[in-house]
Image 1 (tube, helix red, strand yellow):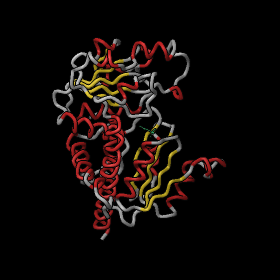
Image 2 (cartoon, protein in one colour):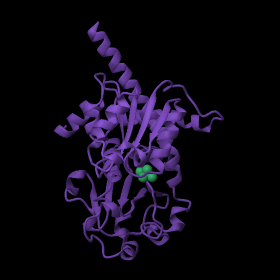
Image 3 (spheres, rainbow, N blue to C red):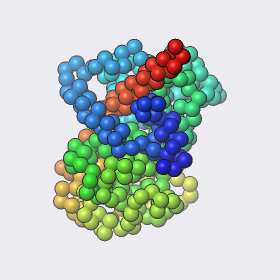
Image 4 (cartoon, rainbow, N blue to C red):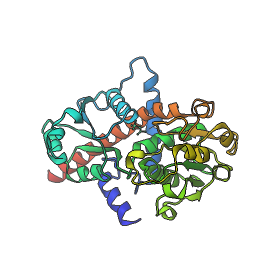
Length: 335
Ligand code: CP
């Protein structure tokens, strides 16, 4: 285990090894990731009930703090918290005191003074949720909803749940991640989760300008061409071009990118006949994926969105359970 693994593990887990924050997949083991998937499985049925609620977070206050735009993550975190019976506060950053220059630390101190139990944080700065978890009042859980280029662990876990539902296992699976890997926090978390869960191969398909320099250390193989890259692939994960994080000209044009790396019906035929197509969203039709594929029978993109609710219910309930267990332990220690 590396120092990074060890420090992330120590911060995320309580003394009994239970989740108390969820910041990154880095440092978590297969048993814990499988427990998250199994817990999420048990919540899928809640979403099919007439009254879609369980009382696990009754009396808890969850604050959604999104310093970056979001459709899927923010909505599914809100629905997940409400289905767990929590009180939910969505802070609108554009009309909050952040726009008057209040620092992140001061905003958090004020929200902690309102007896919040959990912060769900999306931030453009890599490491922001980690920083908050290090300084927050004991007992308050921090969930990373995407930080800079670093990590998007709940997205990776909802992707793992979707893969498990469709393929039944990770062993023996070959998974291709295609497109802008360099700027993708989703890809980093997916690679870690797939490797921990035992996928046979994670293959990155991208132009060299959109691959990280440390690609060899990520535990992946690399292909630069879709036709050879998609050979024998069971799961294709497409990524969008993240223009907001690009510095300088990394591509000749979107049209050229689509021609070489865009997933269309013709290129899909190079993967296994039962390969599924995934995308974390937002999708850009005609840039990285053809509509006929995005809306076609092999696409599980909207299943991913649905699974986001169950995964976020699992992570929030497990983190709150881990915080409560730690509080009990600390109180016993003081008695
Ligand atoms: N997949 C994802 O993070 O989407 P949003 O940016 O809409 O939350």
